[in-house]
Image 1 (cartoon, rainbow, N blue to C red):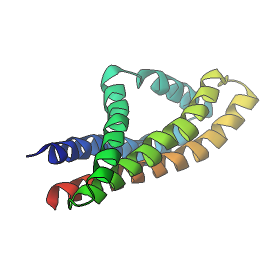
Image 2 (image 1 turned 90 degrees about the vertical axis):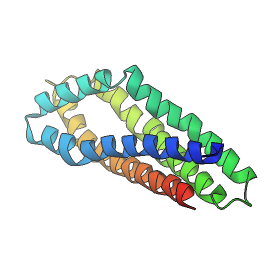
Image 3 (image 1 turned 30 degrees about the vertical axis):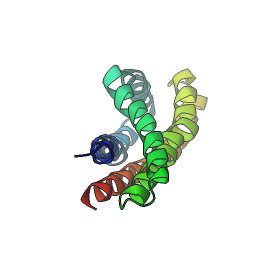
Image 4 (image 1 turned 60 degrees about the vertical axis):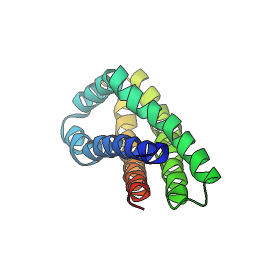
Length: 158
């Protein structure tokens, strides 16, 4: 296994981990939080947003951003190799669709939620919007991570 195949293998694993996590949020966690009283759902999500910031999550999430940059560069400078374009595509999908969406769409909503009072009318109104908007963008990043996984896997297969 050469260095591009190794990079693709690690990229597939990391993208798969992130796709799975976001999938579970989209189709299990967020629907469950929407079913409980708003104050309870808000409090749990506020705690999730603190709890998720552990080294193992950050290592995979941020490590994949760095790996994606490498995949874009290495795929771009190796256009003659069959795995060149799928590597660059996988890197772009993860970097823009997963990492970028998280930083631009999900994190700002998490920051507002962290300051919201679950007992207030304003907090509960924000929670209603948060559930819809945050979950939509979570679907986007889940799909992007899955497509990155597919592109990394294709790079291994060719």
